[in-house]
Image (cartoon, rainbow, N blue to C red; front, side):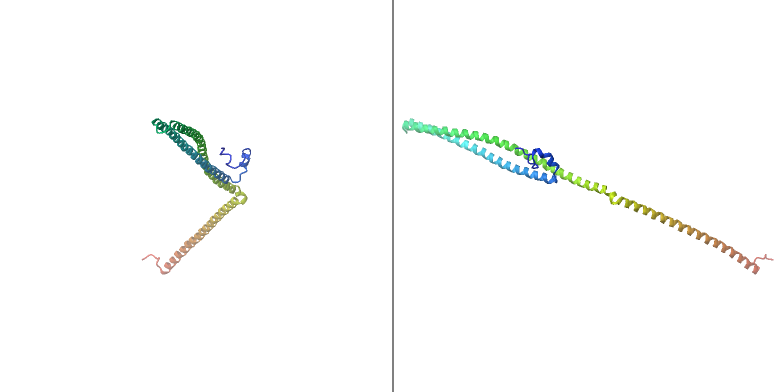
Length: 238
């Protein structure tokens, strides 16, 4: 049984082209795993049936061998009774012969059952090998599916980011940010310029105030001296 032929439900000659055209590889892989699990269930059922046939053939062989031995023992008893005189010799010989025929018949059935048991056991071994191969394949594809899902997640995220990066210039985001940066720089320069002008204005006012203060102090000294002269306070004492 080729357990790989049904993985994606495609013909062997069209495998590569069909895989290239898959729209959703995850769903297809999941479907393939479901098919494999169905095959596994069927194989397990068949294995159980064949093992049951092995057991039945073994039991039948044992029964036939037991009957053959029983008929042989009966033939011996018939001959012994005839020898003791309990049965007529001719009757004992006839019945013993019939018992031996039954013995041979059961031995033949036992041989056939043994052959069937061997044949069924070989089939069970082959089915068991297929079951183990299916289990290994399912486990492998379960891991492949986990890896595939992770790769799809990463590739989708990467594709989205790359698309956004590729569309940045066309959407004007970068140019908008550049214009905003230039405008902020211009605003900062303008603010600094106004600060310098304000500082310059304060400096001129301070110079004017200082000049006025010096001028006022000189006039006050002159007025004080005039008052002292008027009062004669500046004349030397006699």
